[in-house]
Image (cartoon, rainbow, N blue to C red; front, side, top):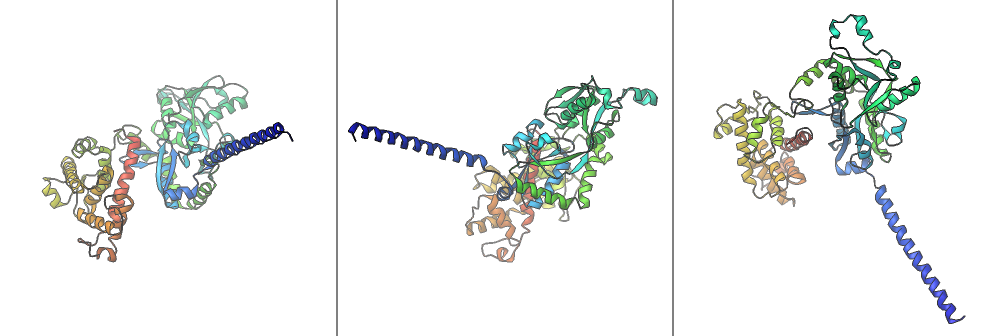
Length: 481
């Protein structure tokens, strides 16, 4: 073989090897990208993280704040499901309904916990759980302003009684909802056109129904359980005309979260057999008195951004300790549920549940007086705060302060000493000192030579801090700073 031919052969081999090398490298890169893309957060990952992330919508039946307490049909069921999984619950409010599916499939949440109608189109994007309940869609329309003085015949003539009467008219609904889908199907079924006025996705069904009440829009469509409960507060509404057959309402998970989907369905199968399941449904969709009382309240988050009657006092005195007033409000709720007259078995009383001797030292002469109680309570928090200068993280320092407010700072000092002995960080509450304070109700720990102040019911400060911060996260969702 000639030298030139050999050289040519080697050159070809070199280029083939080079091509194969880059092809393999590219394949490796692609396989790494696929692995990253296919990483999922299913039941095992949720349990390992200790938190279930639920995507939901802020509305008067799903999730809201009332008198300082987070509430809602979906919220109460989610609390029970999280306990079933033995994890914490994190509520993620999606301001725009159109984003629910996008945020679920991008991994921002684990489950959509909102009253979703099961449709074929939606099944392509998500996996639905077993249904929570059945409902049907109804037309929401407004009676004439003078409807009470009209004869039955005139009132009847003023309203739509059959969907066919809607041909040529306009119905206002959000985009990407089963309501819009239903209007399109009605047009097709009736052989005509019902025009659609597309509303912003951030509007809740409650707010859209209120637009009908106010005359801003003529018609909308809603699930009959929501429409019926709204009509108890707004008698001017007519919600009697059905526009669909019975439909299933469910939650949704990603297609690749099969274990989570099975866990939800197993849990639903169990809870549906219990009276509690129907009690929760009736509370939000059947109890008309409760709904009217709530909607009339200033401390219902869909009305105003108020947590309690004492918001102004809490804001004023929170400045003295430089804490977010919503966090202090959560602590006040934990202590008294905003009832200034409440007293405990240990003789603590008032909004901040001050003990008689503590109140005296703080200059509080009337513990039932809201202003004195909040002033005294925040002053006491400031005193405790100063004793944890070694805790550099402000959130951790707040947690030490709150735990001390609950059970006494000397028990917390004991827990810090034991934490150091056990190789934990004595200046970190989360997963460190909080775990030790739980143990101070056990003889081998409260009798330890390093423990000076003995037994404490550690579950109380542990839950106290955890529940205040959990509630605070809800307050942040509903009330601006």
